[in-house]
Length: 334
Image 1 (spheres, rainbow, N blue to C red):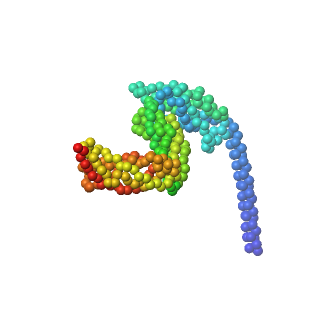
Image 2 (cartoon, rainbow, N blue to C red):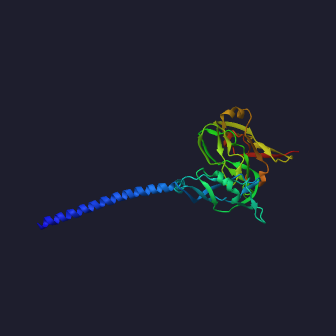
């Protein structure tokens, strides 16, 4: 009997707890719903809030350029409906405020040719017109924007090609690599432009070229420096080559008029690679020019004269010269 009575007591307490939890859950649900409805109702009212907007400047004063970084944000007191302000507070993208420095009322600081200031009160209409239609401008959080300018100068500099390349087997450069244009005009602060003597292209890596390659290559960007050309045209003329063997007569240089020299041998053989398109020209006389120098007799030891290369057509790459040194006989002219 006692156990049965205790069991009934426990069951009664459990039912009361269950009812209490149910009531609390129902109360909590309606409380949350009521709070949400109350909050949504409040969002339909207008409020004021300070928001930091991105600031962009454009159109520098004629002949001038900004030094350093311009102001990047401007705090604005704006008024709008609660749900609008909440959207921006939660990270909605803010459209930047643009300031045209060529049209703005810039004022120079005393005793300074470079530093200027701009009262934000003069920008009120400009800023208000750029705010989205659901926002109204109140106060501007700062009263002055500061800028520093320097005179813009121009300079013509050469372009350097940042190139790494390899050629397919049995291929050569037919002519020098060309850049068009090979120089450009840069503009910017004088202190910066004076330190730049050339400008490089973006790195270009080419492998196993077997034909002429042409492409537009971007020119490197330099902070605060303008460029007359953003890209340049490069041309890498590549052709197939063949092996050739030719002979040529040695020239003698710096020989006194009172002497005569006999070279042994007077003709030398050249083993070379030549572009297929230039092979016939090579056989018809467009040859490598070789010479010996009489002055070498006094500048280097030995009983022979060293064979030297004078000119080589661009389409020809020398592999071997035989012989590399020649004997000689010298006679006086009576």
